[in-house]
Image (cartoon, rainbow, N blue to C red; front, side, top):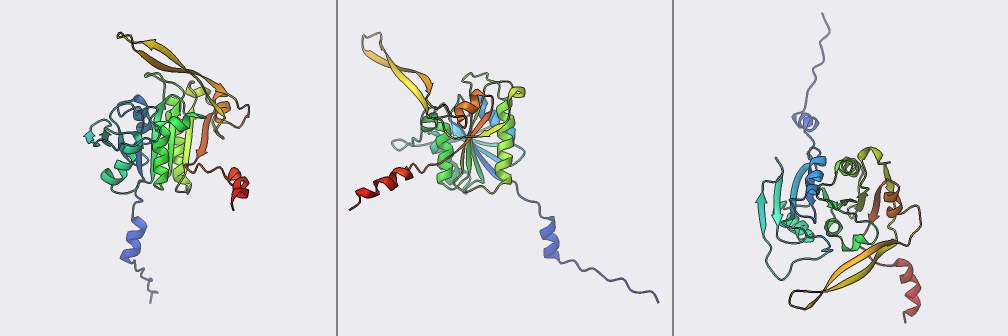
Length: 275
């Protein structure tokens, strides 16, 4: 008599669990240059296959808006066909408005990541304060959504985004592989040089650099005065661990930033004021 073969019993629940396909992360994309800008198209194309992408971006340029929100007028959302196969909405508000509306009215949930950019022009050093690109990323982090803002050091409408596209994807893949703290915000800047000349990524601190500003005074055709802001960018920080140094030396700079503006060292010193 031949020995009987042991029958393997497969539990349906266990089998289902093993064959279940892992869902792709939901990635919200926005910017401050407007939904028609080449930079946001480059960002969408760089990550479109690694997540479920939803775009909610301003209907026009909103550069320099910082963390402004719209409170004195209604906001409107319009579904648009901007990116093949990608759900996209244009918004009449600011970059921060876009993030708020995306979470509450478009996604009805928090995305796994929020990406902002790719901005036309650098957002290194003090620019992070004024930047609509970075304010959108910071707003997402306030809502406990890990985020990153991407900027290319070129204001031209026909800028070459190939290097920025490549490194945006590398950084997003790293963010998805790493268990990111929910308030993570990365400020990523890419030098405006050919992709082949980029030397890699540098994790940096924000440089102390700013614009030495001047207002040019002019007269309009009616003889009334008006002013035009100009200025020269000056770097006061000679450290080799800053975003300004990294960009000048052909590295992609990555600065972890935060929305908590507390100066903790000064807070401890001021404790003597308490009575």
